[in-house]
Figure 1: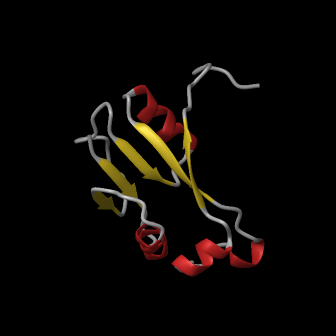
Figure 2: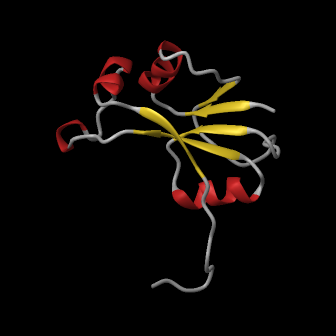
Length: 103
């Protein structure tokens, strides 16, 4: 089983290391799901539809969660800023309930 960190943000990579969170491979982007296997873990901040795909494959998803104030949106955040914003890792399971309709 492999733990992947998916982030293009160096602050997130540094934060993971600083906080002592283990990962085996760092990817800057998830191009496709090749190489991912049931039992693997993926850490990142991914869209919900991709998380649903991963969960359907048996891949565990752990979200890098934080609340970013409007004044910091769109900026590269450092590991220290992530800590100040109380970043944390939270596991999620996402399941599609209806592929054809919304509402």
